[in-house]
Amino acid sequence: MARDAFTVAEANALVPGLTQTFRQVDAHKYQIREATKRIEVLELLWGEALRDPANTDHADYMEKRATIDRCLRGIQRSIQEGVVALGLRLPMGGIEDGLVDIPTTYDGRWVYLCWHMGERELKYWHEVDAGFQGRQEITPEQREEMGHDDPAGIDDSELDF
Image (tube, rainbow, N blue to C red; front, side):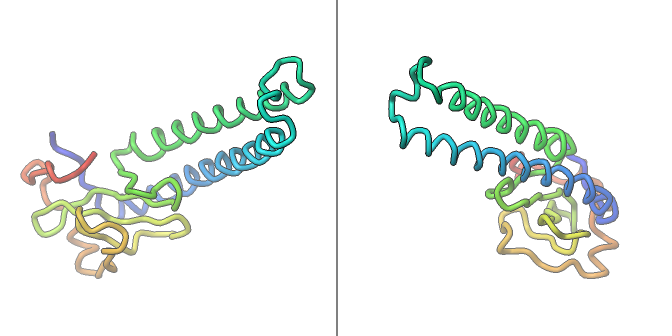
């Protein structure tokens, strides 16, 4: 199956949407942390009795659990719509650290443009097996070349999504 290869300019056009996606993810993560803290306090106070519907804090407990479930679904939806549906990849630690790999071609092979939350434009790339630690700065020459090879003629079996 041939994948789309993004040019650096096309990838840069995705940055505002990626930023918005990860702001949504961060908001959900914040709500999860707050709900989890409240659940921990309630569990310390009540132990197993908290799960009894007659417990005075049971409704609060259930509300916090529902918040966590809703936020987890929100994270999944945000990532699916704002990253995966665009043909992009979350590397290991992507959700936690705001990292996205954007497939491109360079010198007859697949590589990834690498975006990190907070970056206003794509400045780095890495080999498909290198990861974040293998990031290299995009040179002006690479900026012009990346994404212009015909991806149909390049083996994409090394891409892991």
